[in-house]
Amino acid sequence: MLAIYKRELKAYMTSVIGYAFIALFLAVSGALFVYTTMYSMTANSSSYFTMMMLFFVVLLPLLTMKSFSEEKKLRTEQLLMTAPISIFGMVMAKYLAALTVFSASMVVAVLPFGILYRYAAVKTAVLLGNLVAILLVGGAILAIGIFVSALTENQLTAAVGTVGLVLVFFVISLLNTVIPVYFIRFILSGVSIFARYQNFTQGVFDFAALFYYLSVAAVFLFLTMRIFDRRRYR
Image 1 (cartoon, rainbow, N blue to C red):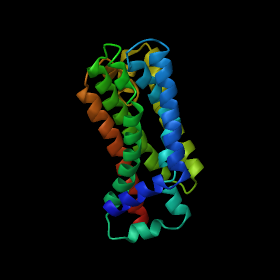
Image 2 (image 1 turned 180 degrees about the horizontal axis):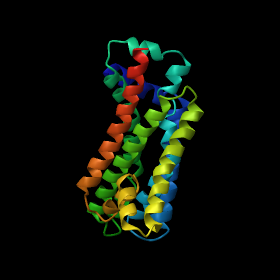
Image 3 (image 1 turned 90 degrees about the vertical axis):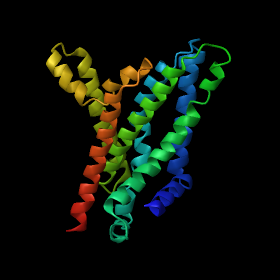
Image 4 (image 1 turned 90 degrees about the horizontal axis):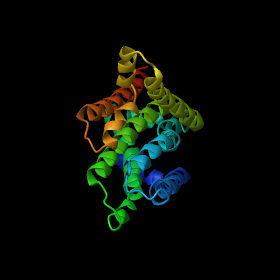
């Protein structure tokens, strides 16, 4: 597992996709920081994180689109599946590599908020709550991307498919705000990645949301493992 993890990290750091993701991620983050804090003259970080989360729909599929699709295209998938490593270890290594690149980029992206402590009263609980939540949302989206990448050998198809699936969760969040029937709203909020984010924007650590995001990631990683489990015994 460690060998694949290191190989994936190296691939990100030596490929155009890895540098393109980091550059685009930090560029979007910087622009949002200027717009939501400096331009608006506020120390409230909630707007930044909420808008950043919306950009995840397009940004994060860049990290996962080649995870398994490239292996399938290059015919190296069988080498992975016959290597002395479990399917769990193979999938988790790919996922953790993408999660590492994303998390490192996100931590670097929020460093400018440290400047605000010199000039304004920054609510640390809100800042940390949003950071934890954004990492959880990102982790869930990456798991979805890993799953979609395992379904195809075309990287573009994997990226578009991930965007489409994540947009389904986003649309569910929008429907949750306009449907008047409480029972339906309750059901929709239970499957919406974005609806459960709101408590964190107020600095409230929501353990139910933590469990939900971890569960979403676990479900899609499990489905990915099932895909390769079936392929191994064909």
